[in-house]
Image (cartoon, rainbow, N blue to C red; front, top):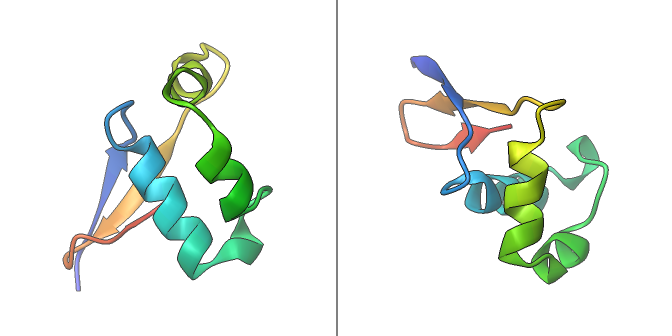
Length: 66
């Protein structure tokens, strides 16, 4: 199996985070219910903060793990 490190973009952050919360909720500081309530501007604001960087590891099956 191979893995690729990718930068998370505004277009993919929500899907990746929700998938991670669904499969491994203990690895995150929030809940899936809280994340589902966030609106698009909140997702973009978090990602576009100059103080934060987001990366994910994607396996060869296309699954990303933040």
